Length: 187
Image 1 (cartoon, rainbow, N blue to C red):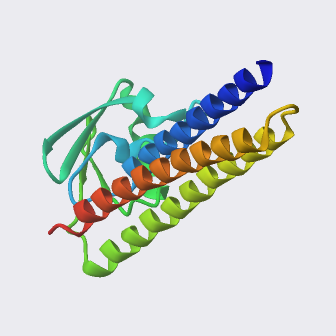
Image 2: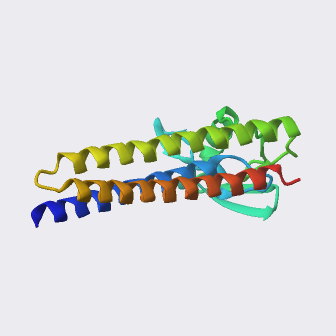
Image 3: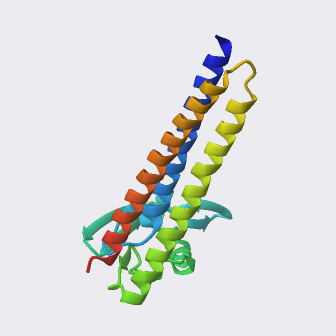
């Protein structure tokens, strides 16, 4: 039955797209600051290096000697000033300390107000992820309905499978959000 294999392809494609939404959400969560320093906090920072926007992680090595401190060692010392400017412009709220060879980033203690702002960011991005997953569900359901020759019972069964995938991926995103909120609110 060619229609049946088409339906299976639609299900596999939907699951793959939903999983990609989850992976994108994980990357997003990594850029949101928690109480501890993490390398992924700096992932979104672009530095103007010789006229080209370059990801920070390509210009410097990063080490985390303490829970709330990061050290950046630029591969090219002439990029120190540019790296410092890029960090200051970012929305991380960090003040880089440049000693001429390395940049030290000390994460200040988060105020309760700032923690709540970060939790709002997590929830906002969670909602965007839910919407993305639901859009995949809608598209998959539309494709299933358009398959010709598929009995109505099979269409319903495939739509139920798509709904299960949707529920499973939304629950996974909610669990990630919960873990991130917990790490933000932990003092």
